[in-house]
Image 1 (spheres, rainbow, N blue to C red):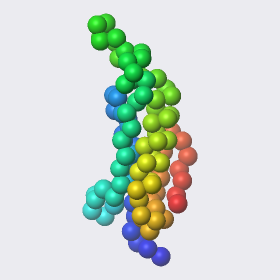
Image 2 (tube, rainbow, N blue to C red; image 1 turned 135 degrees about the vertical axis):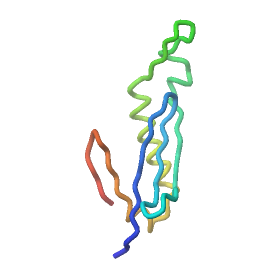
Image 3 (cartoon, helix red, strand yellow; image 1 turned 180 degrees about the vertical axis):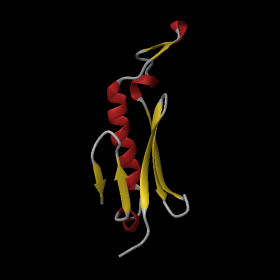
Length: 95
């Protein structure tokens, strides 16, 4: 059994979401993928003249799916088997 362990982290920013897969032993990034929020980019729910900047919930859901999928697609199979997925507001899944 392999002793290597990797963790998937997800960061939601103002206009994008980033997923990274990191080696827990040394912090090395094995894979990452960034997705810009579509509705934010289209200027929806934002009005800079009124200093109003909002995100749409679908941007979070679609961005999460696309960023995680994008990071996983670039990850070698040997690393995928040792990656721990932790979602603080959802299920925990170990592959």
